[in-house]
Length: 213
Image (tube, rainbow, N blue to C red; front, top):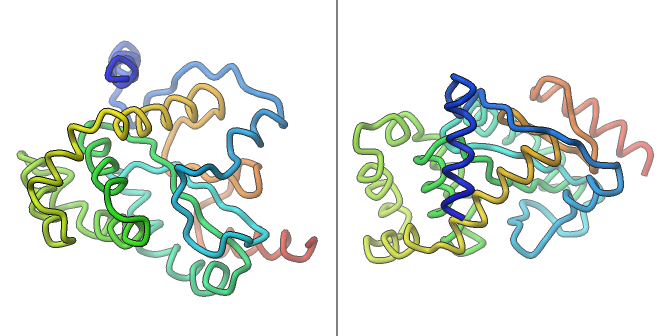
C-alpha cells in the first residue's frame, strides 16, 4: 500500500501542484455503487447514535485548515442540535493530503474507539503546533503523549502497515470513485453536499431531510 500512497503524491507532482490541490482521475460510479461505497463499515468511527436517520460522511485531512475550521466552528453546533439528539451521525474518513496528515490519521486510528473523536478534535485544535512543525513527527508524538499514547505505542502505530493501508485506500477510493478532490468534502445520506460547510447550510439541508423522514 506504500506504493498507493507514493502514487498519490506522484500524480500530484506531475500535475505541478501540491497534494491539497491534486485531482486524480474520476471515472465516476452509479448511484447504487456510490451508496455502497458510502455505507457504514466496521472500520468507520461513528460520532452519534448508530441508528440516527441522517448520516454525514466527511472526507478530511488532519492538516487541512478548512477541515480544522469546520471542526472548531461548525461541528460543535451541529453536534448539539443534530448529533447529540440522535437525528444525525457523523463519520469522518481519511483523505490525507500529505505525510503528516497520514501519520496523524494512523495515530488516531490506533486510539480506542471512544477516544477517536476527542483526539481528532485535539489534532485539529492544535494543527498549527504540529502540522507545520519542522519536525512534525516529534511534535505529533508530544501531542499524542498528552492523550495517553506513549512512545512505544506511537512508534508501533506508525509501523502498522494495515492502518497505513486503510488510510491511503480511503483517499484513493474517494478520489477515483467518489470524485473527492478537496477537503473537507461531505456526503449526506449518500449524496454529495455541494453547499458551503456552514452551520446555516447544514441546518437547512438537515432540516429538509428530517422533514421527509
